[in-house]
Image 1 (tube, one colour):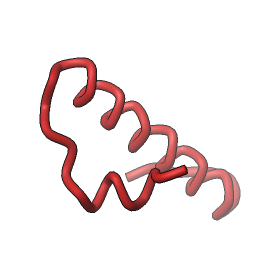
Image 2 (cartoon, helix red, strand yellow):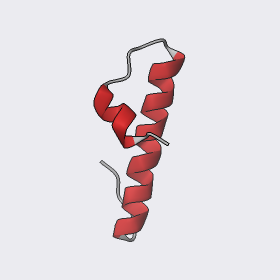
Image 3 (cartoon, helix red, strand yellow):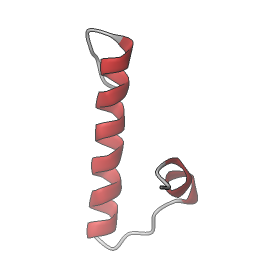
Length: 42
């Protein structure tokens, strides 16, 4: 959960948190769930 002065700011914060979790998973050699791979595919 994240808060912001605007909806867009809160969404940016949530995306930032999600990317950090993904980076931590990769760094620790954990399997990344397919749902996250789809969300952050380039």
